[in-house]
Length: 88
Ligand SMILES: [Zn+2]
Image (cartoon, rainbow, N blue to C red; front, side, top):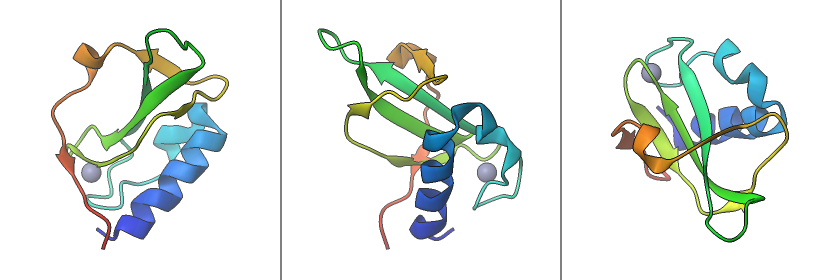
């Protein structure tokens, strides 16, 4: 469950959001990774990425970024409560 593994999966998913769930979760191995962006009010091109595994409910935390094309954009209420992994 190395933070670096999570970061690598996030980078890949950010480049190609529709491919997010083809990779295995760094923690439990399930192909249940999810990437969604909680849109900022006032600046609709930006959002806070939420990246987690739908199986073991683990993920990592990010600050606001520009939302990539083909990304899933949600309201915060649609994000489950997941366990945040800290940098090593
Ligand atoms: Zn998992």
